Amino acid sequence: MMTTDDAATINEDADASFRARRAALGESVDRLAALVRALTPAQLRQQAYPSEWTVADVLSHLGSGAVLTRLRLDGTVDLDPQPVWDEWNAKDPDAQAAAALVADAALQARLATITPDEQAALRFSMGPMELDLPTFLGLRLNEHAVHTWDIAVTFDDAATIPPGEAGIMVDTLALISRFAGKPTGAERTFTVRTVAPERFFEIALRTDGVALSPLPPVDVPDLELSTDALVRLVYGRLDPAHTPVVNVLSAELDELRKAFPGF
Image (cartoon, rainbow, N blue to C red):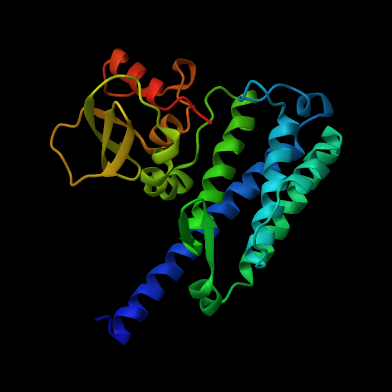
């Protein structure tokens, strides 16, 4: 039976997790704002890392996502995102860029008002899953940081996701891999060590899916890479042109790239 002290510890841990993710999201928001304010109208219309989107399209996606996230925080249930998407799609690229920064700031302001009691009560449905606030906010951090990279790398091939953000994002990859991973026909398991921060994981390739799960430390992992690189691998953004030095055979890394084709 859970005691009062146990419940208090859980609430303190959840509050610390929420605050860390809110702070990391704030850093990504500030980084994106500084990047976007330096772009010209022509650069907003350039193709971003996702081949089907311009830079402005990525910003529209982030801006509409900020609006939808704020509506969920405010208690909107059975939210139909299509009207929000339609509104953002109707904006011209310059308006999409400007409005995205405003929407990001509004979401950060809303997050700053959330009390510990509100944190404990908030739950968010996502398909068959029910998420608590730190997990829900972690998904927004992932989306924001990855798409900020999509823009940054358009103008700087050496762009990375900063360690402070990647270090929080890496602990959500087990959840992300459930829908990001695709069977390749291979049956094998990789052990992985990341640095900055150090984490250990297992990536299991199976005929019916892909699973990534935390591991205790291992002496000789199959793959060693930066935390940023593992995050980008799972999100399908570790192509050969944007891969730092990693300790793994190229054929094995290609197998992992096939397992995480991106979304």
